[in-house]
Length: 335
Image (cartoon, rainbow, N blue to C red; front, side):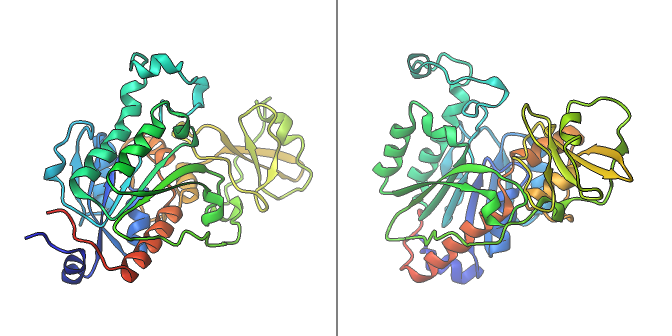
């Protein structure tokens, strides 16, 4: 007999979710804070899966290439969250979009990477999740097969709402614009009115460490020379034409998997000091609590943090999904 969503929620006292391409757990952390139980999480990188399992021991964990799994072996849940690889969509590192005819023939190096998005359609066909959230970089919408991919979800009965959100509007001390595609079916509708949170300045997530006195010329020296207010931490960015910005009035730029763009500078008694952003500060900017533990070496931790979905955005979506499912006659889940 096919279980109903209402029956499962009553038995467990929880609404369940599946977290695909789960990384180190930003989505699961946010959904958990919202009151959603992430039943299963899957990712291809064992180090990220180990981090996820360490912090979310009640979730089932699978290390797998999600382009090749049998979705019948996964449990049906109310919510699917998927963050397919963005590596060959993003323009970071000087990467250029391949010509349409090359991408269509799947002959360029990133074609297989981009195709991980098809796992969403394959999983949805089997499980008919009432709510799906897909997160990616904004360039995902420039993918040659993007409209075809959307039509695949529409063909499964989903109503779609693409939206671009900035983490700074959802309680984070960083600007991070990402594309979110919200897909719902069976009469479920999410109220996606922005929460209207007050901006959080970077100073709230920074440690008091001023760094070392600047004893040589740095790439960011022109920015440090702009600092006029003593004793106030400033954000300096390792990018061309960047300007020093007061940390008590601005957010960080986007936290990346490389993690080497953010510096902190402060002038004390006329002496400029400088240091790089720490992994813990970057994790705070992504919304992870200080109690969250990461596995791997420093570079691997940096990668997990930079690839994460901001916890606050995932929490907001989880809250919206809970509200929608509690006011809608919940459809039956796939067996």
